[in-house]
Length: 234
Image (tube, rainbow, N blue to C red; front, side, top):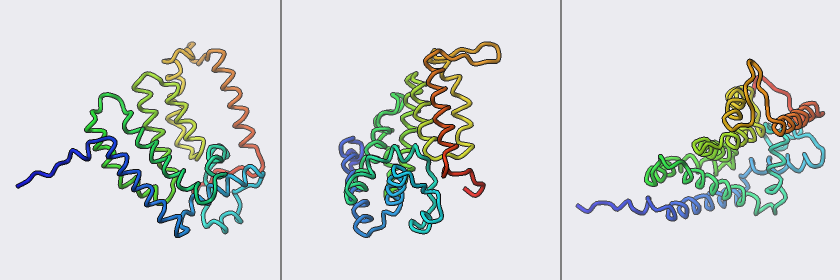
């Protein structure tokens, strides 16, 4: 009995092309039928943001059939996709997210062999396809965490935590920040960017200035009229 040759699925280029074709077909099917509603909601809320119009209103919900659960940071990051032609934006969004996820898997630390990375990609491909089908933000969150893990394993803790914080600032849920914020001083200390003085954390001057500026920016966003309130049902 002939043994089935699995070598095709352990070739990085083959896997990328396979996944790319799947992402393209899924995107084409949804866009051609006008079912890319998540992308349209993201794009419209981004345009509203730059026009100074709040997307956190009943009118937005009724016109898009969904709540907008993201922050102004998300709108800033989504701007390049929102300004593209209506037919092109969804393809760039999905195909770029697919490519970044693929890169995140295959840049995992050396403790994972090439074959293991191939299997990880194949195991997650069905979930990836489902998220691509809905144009969801889950994929960026996933590859940001994978990149963060790889950075931590390469002793680049500051950049790892920075990526996690950027991801968290796009869609805020209270419990999300407990871990990253609690670990941030320890990671900064490991990077030589702060030190512990008895019960206080003392940051280096550059980090302290950046923290003050970030705190000021976040306060302005939170106090801005039309900012989303934290609701118990989200």
